[in-house]
Length: 202
Image (cartoon, rainbow, N blue to C red):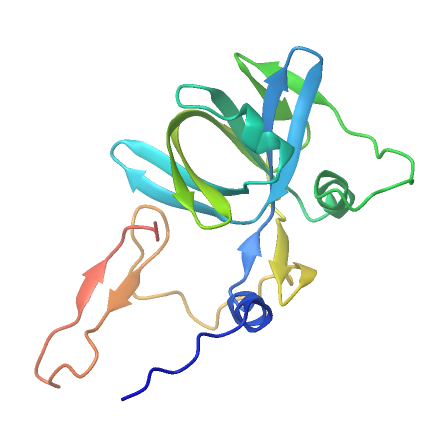
């Protein structure tokens, strides 16, 4: 039976773009300043050890400054920092540079005013097609004071969270992090009992 042709890259981008993500600036400290890059391909990998993954285009300048054992930071943008996302994505061109400031965070730079930040050391780098798959070991964390209003990216556009609606009634049971997730295997018998976990999503 002949195999179906593979989807083209534009269709792939359109489809995967329906997976909403946050927006970050990945940064390294260089002798003459900070080099940053916008990234939304950022994923929590492991809790033990603490690992996070970020994908970096082979052609990105940042790729030349990442190596195993090298420090970097992941800075999560707030919903009023869209201009910084556009700037660090290289789409700013001849416009005046927006205002921002990095401060030293041991051996990595931290974006002042970001929603949150992770200080990492490159654990390994794997070739992932036209990107490097960079796995970082998390060595420090920073959270800004609430309210936490993240910048989101969905279907090729920047988005913002709507104000949370008040629940009609409190959930039956919440875990220590305020999250209850129920998993039920597809096609399970009606007599099967769903597994419940109060762990937050990874």
